[in-house]
Length: 136
Image (cartoon, rainbow, N blue to C red):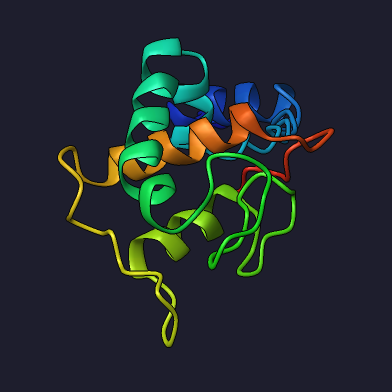
């Protein structure tokens, strides 16, 4: 009779345990929320965006209503430089070369958050049936 080594019972146990269960595929995580979506849930943030828009954008170039001036209307659903939240943010932040649209990055009192608040206001005041996807 041969002697089994102390490892033999362990190997037998592992062999009987069967294959490792398949790992379940996890669902893809949702895209990160745009700051605009967060600000849209807070009326005070939308109002701040409104006041910023009236005092900076609407007072000089863009109308506060759906009419064209020497700058495009921002309430008519036609976005010349992209209509997603991220594209509008980039346009406001960087400005538009060879136009009157200046860069606002780092200019507003609360920085980037104020730009996002302006976009939240524009989304809340839009005449569009549904706002474009808010890719951020």
